[in-house]
Image (cartoon, rainbow, N blue to C red):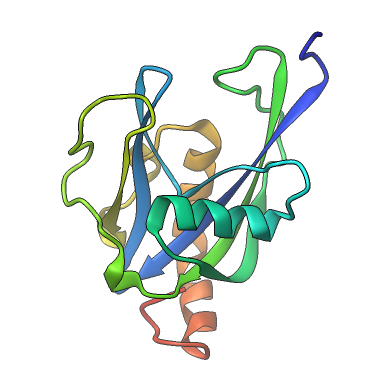
Length: 164
């Protein structure tokens, strides 16, 4: 069966705490990559269920979704499967316990074996699209920089001004 005309749906969370944004360093398909926490939507899941499942798998905790941030609005072929289109959905998230996330301090501080991954905080003042590997994540990183103040102010009414 041909993959042409098929879609891959992925759901990601953008979480900021105390002036740092969370990314995950991962090794898949023989390639190291840095991306936002999240992953593939499974049949029967809602996008929010997918995001919470992925955050449980990658971070060990569920998250609160504060807002929709971005959905892919350009054509993006999947990186790893030929003739399939990628649609990615990004949400602003709040961690239930951000200090409990076992984050590495150095990128790719683990054995380079398929499936290995580790979360890592990046100070917002140092964060750019160059920190991320995947093309849509790079677009989102630029949008995060553009809208950081907007969401920090919105989160101020929900928690602390340093989170969104």
